[in-house]
Image 1 (cartoon, one colour):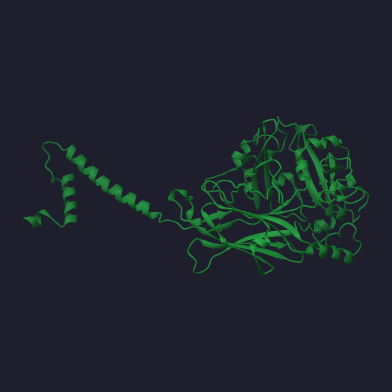
Image 2 (cartoon, helix red, strand yellow):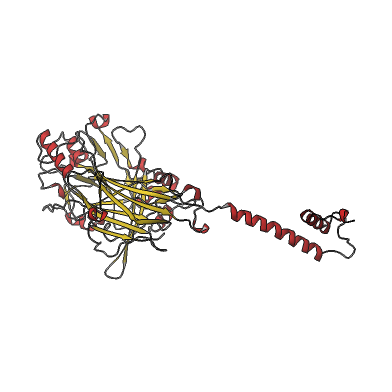
Amino acid sequence: GGAASPELTLGGVGGRDARGEVRYGQLPHEAVCVENLTPWLRLLPCRDHRGLAALLAGEAGRAAVFRAHYHSLGLELTQDPDGGATLVQTLQMVLPPREGARGGGWSLHEVLPGRLEGRCEVAAHSHVYVELEGSLLRAGLNGSRGAGVDADAAVENGAYAVMPSPSAVLEDARGGAHGAAPDRILLDYPVPHEYRRDGQAAAMDVTFAPRGGLAGNDGAWAPPAGPPMRASLTARRGRASPFGDSTLEIRMYRATQRPASLPPPAGAVDGSEREAATTKALLAPVPYCLLQVVPSWARVLVHTLRARVDGRDLSWREAFPSHSVRAATSSHPATLELCGALPAGASAVEVRVEVEAALGHVDEYLPDAARGRDLPAAVLTLTAPPANRSSGNGAAGWRVASALPASDTHKRPLLRRLHATGRAERVYSDALLLDQPQPDFSMPYNVILATGTLQSMLIGSIMALLLRRPGDQPGTNGSSGGLLRRLLSRFTGFSKEKAE
C-alpha cells in the first residue's frame, strides 16, 4: 500500500521534477465493489452534468469507459508559489474501433455517447482537440510537403474529411521551419457556453470520415511506429519453488522497424535514403529509465537482481549506472529505479529479480483472495528529442495555421502540456497477477461455529434452570433438563438406565 516517491523517472531521465517531490501510486485492478470514476467526477465543479465530463454521463457513458481496452484516472496536485494549489485531472482511454467502420472512421458521439451541450459555467474556456499525424495529412495530399499547412487541406483532402470545420488549425512547431511538414496537427473546437445548431440547442459532435484508399484499408497509410522501445512484464515460478515465490522478468526491447508504407522522413528522396534513416534509428543508443513499484505484500530480494543485454549476462550496476532501490515499509511500497541506455546495435535488455509473496494477516486479504494480487505495470521513461523552437506566430510550441490570435494559445495549459520542453515518453507494460499464500479461511468459520454451538447449549440450559416453575419436574415431558442430561450421557457414556 501507499505511494512511491521516485527520484529518477517521472521527473525526466536523470533528474527530479522541477515542481518538487513526486508521489506516484498505481491501482492496476479495482477491488470488488469499488468504483473510482464517480469520486473522480465529483472533484469537478460541474461533475458530469456540464462540460467535457458530460460525455461520460449516464449508464452509456460509464460503460464506454469500462469497455475501453485501457483506461487510467489521474490526479496531479501542484502547490502554487502564492500558497494555493492546482489540481489537474486526467482521463486516458484506448477505445475499441467502431464495429463496421472502415479505415478508422469515428465520431465523438459514437465513442463517448454522452451529450456535450456546453461548457461548465465556471470554466473560462473549454476545447476539444483532434490530433492528426502529419503523415496522414501528407497521404491525403499525395505525399506533397509544400510550404506549411493549408487549413482547408488539413480538414478535408483525398484521405479524410473532418466535420464540422474547426475554428483553428495548429501545427507542431517541432516539424521544422514553415516550409516543412509538421509531425502532427491539432484541430481546435472550442466549446461554447451553450451549443446551438440552426438556432436550436443541440449536442456538439465531431466526425472523422476516411476517403479513397484509406477508407478501403488498402495500405494507403499506416500509423507511426511509436516510441523506440517497448516493455513487457512476466513472472516465472520454478517447480520446486515455494508457493508465492516468483521471478519477475522485465524485458525492454527495441521497437520493430518503421512500416514501409509510411512516407519517407523529411529530406529523403528515395528508398535507399529511407532505409539508411531507418537503420540509423535502429542502431542508435536509446537512453531510458525503468520504474517498477512492488507493493509491501511482496518482498523483493535485491541480491537476486540480474541484467542481460541480448542474452549476455551483465552486472546490473554496470548496466544501470544511475539507480535507486528502496525497500518496502509499512506505508510505502518497494521501488526499483534503473536508468541506463540500450547500447547501439543491441535489441533488448532484460532485468530479473526474485520476489516472495508474504503471508499476510487475514484482515489484509481482498474479498476475492483466491484470484491473487496485482503487481503494477512497469513504467519505461524515454527521453524525447529537443524541441525545435522555430519562430512561428504561435505559442507554447504550436504554430497557428489559420486565423486565431497567437496570444490565445498562452491561456491553454493543455497545449503547453502537449508540447513541454524536453517532454519524455512513457511506455507501460501490462500489469501482472501473482499468487499469494493464503491462510485457511475455513478455520475461523469452524471456530465460530463450534463456539456458537457450545454457547447456545450452555445459555439454553442456564435459562431453563432460571425460568423453571415450582411445579415442573426436570427430565419429564422432554423438558430442557432431560434433553441436556441425555446429551451429556451421550458424551460421558453414562445413562440412568444402566446405572440402575
